[in-house]
Amino acid sequence: MSLTVVGSIAFDAVRTPFGERERMLGGAAVHFALAASFFDEVRVVGPVGDDFGEDEYAVLRDRGVVTDDIEQVAGGKTFFWSGVYSENLNARETLETELNVFEAFEPKLSDASRDCDVLFLANIVPDLQIGVREQCDKARFVALDSMDLWMNIARDSLDRAIRMVDCVILNDEELEQLTGRPNVLTAAREVLSWGPAAVVAKLGKYGAALVTADGFFALPAFPMETVVDPTGAGDSFAGGFVGYVAAHPGEEIAHGLLTRAMAYGTAIASYNVQEFGTERVARLTPDEIAGRVADLERMTRFEDMPVALRG
Image (cartoon, rainbow, N blue to C red; front, side, top):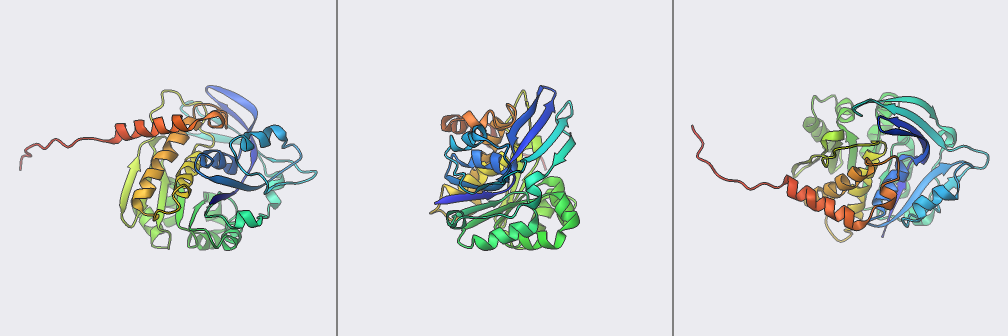
């Protein structure tokens, strides 16, 4: 079986209270692929320029990620983003965005990428998401990410894309903007009524929540004394979450499976923020992930001790 991700491959320049990097590997497809590679074969579809070299390819290939569908555009430059985070890391300011080769991106999928069992449509133009989804008609599970920009300038296409997938992964503010609902739960239930079977709300440093027809489930973020760089944490979470689903091809995609997937996404995202960019996840091990999932289980389990309540 295989998992295909379509999205951005980038160079980032980031400054946080703990330091800075003038140029580091990033992009939604990269962070997703590294996280998902612990569970299944991952194929990346996205564009890069001449400035994307063997060192960058090696980060992906060393984790077994298949890079055959990365399109290297001759004479082009790779997507670039720079930003600075606030002292408490709750907010960030974008300093510069250069779309470069990403501006004219038209996904080109090989037969192997089209034949994927699981598909993740990272944050790209909704019309492109629709086109990729139509090509990958054999996928048993398709998840989608998006952003407020597309809600503002491509709403009809985004609505159509959402109705074509099984799972929508957005942050809480995006869900509320998308639906006009006042809170995450009512917003998620509104999206479920459009067709998807599951909605995941990313809650930043507070964790994530899952809503399906069978119920509600939430996990806190793994407690960290020091967060160095939050860049890519959401995509790392998505990679762990979707990757876990891909690793269970014979199991019905139901609420129980997705709650377990939430734990693995949360664990990998917690490693992502410990260092800049892909630095920590690139050398992450399966034992480390399993250990943190076990810690999450221990921290979120409680024993009910009945008490006589006063009426």
